[in-house]
Length: 287
Image: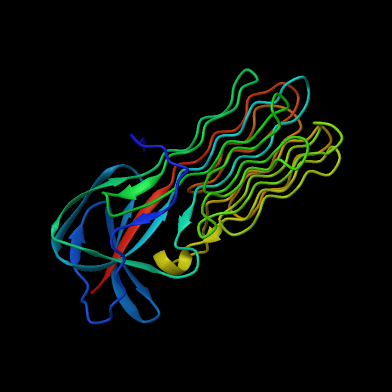
């Protein structure tokens, strides 16, 4: 689930095709399953680690990409760190359909960002991509009192102190991180999520993590939220978990993201942050 490319840039798609006259292709790779969505039968290919997508018959394919979540910063001087941003979820508003020629495409599943240790920031996650055809950016690390500013990414990291929540670099796949406590660094903002912004800290309580996006309509099955931001740390109370995310803490190592693309949770009291969760890539075609 590692990637040679880390990106906080924009989604790329070359080309996106929606023409109804085109027919769906066929392919193999990842884990294959048969699903039905709105009375239409599909083959779903699920990738949770780097692999190849082998297109044997050119045509249309529906794709869903989730970038890796950011890792949260470590807390310092008994103060707080913000929650990390969730990985981008493409597409948030509608199914993305691409045309793929018969060929083999490298599927790059973005790893989650590493947690901050010893008072340092964590790292942003890694992008997820299908060859050079389409990609989605990754979640951002949060801040600690050394700086106070959350990083920018698909969803921004939570800040510590002031209006410094990290910004989304592509609003169609993520949201901004929350702001920290204005008076002190006792509460960190929540990381932005794929479907909502991270919450602002309130005095010594960390901000709630932004909600992830329910992807069950694409993959079929039970509700599953991807790309959630982590809750901010706080000396009084940790920020609540958003849908699919993890809460912030008042002490101890921050919570690691669990669902695909989830950002790590913040903490307080001189502890390491929480790591981000890896993303995923889904490809489906009609049968």
